[in-house]
Image (cartoon, rainbow, N blue to C red; front, side, top):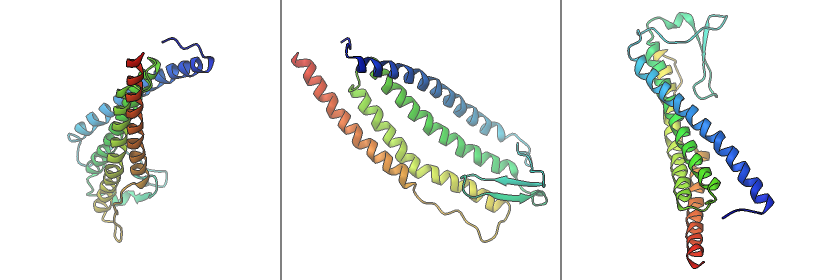
Amino acid sequence: MKMNVPYLLKYHKTAKVMSKILNVCYWIFFSLTVFSFLLFVGSKFFPTGFAPISLNSNGTLSISPDQIIQFRIPAKDFDGVDLNSIFSSFLVAVSFALLLITNILKQLKDILKNVVDNAPFHEKNAKNILHIGYTFIAGSVCVPVSKAYVINKIIHAFDLNNMKAVYTVNVELLFIGILLILLSAIFHYGAYLQQEYDTTL
């Protein structure tokens, strides 16, 4: 059905542009996910004391796995520490986060494709939104686990006293996931009404 209403045409053009942008972003994050995974596999063959890290000008290493806590470790504490193990655990966390983002971008890309094809209430869109919701819920549990895993690796590797990583579910991601699941049910109902309307014409 051809859209003649001006504002609908405007939104349709915007959807086309966004679809192209999302498609590019998807392939970028897909490539980064594959690269980080391959780098993780390759890190198993690195020497024990090797890791692609550099010291600050004052001879210390600053690490902030969760962008909240920052570890500042003097170079003298590196002796006998398996830096490769820390680097590998960090790559695992990064690879998992990139995998979640890539999956979300794929679902969004498929949703916009249906919008561009003039089928915003297509049943597949409801399934895509549902998958995004599940991804957010999985992230609410697994992302904190991966962060705690990396932080614990650092704590144990450098024998940092009186410190421990506490795991908690990411409530924000969990809430977003639940909302998206509810939204998918609304889209599913909309797809049903659209199908009923099309069959009566």
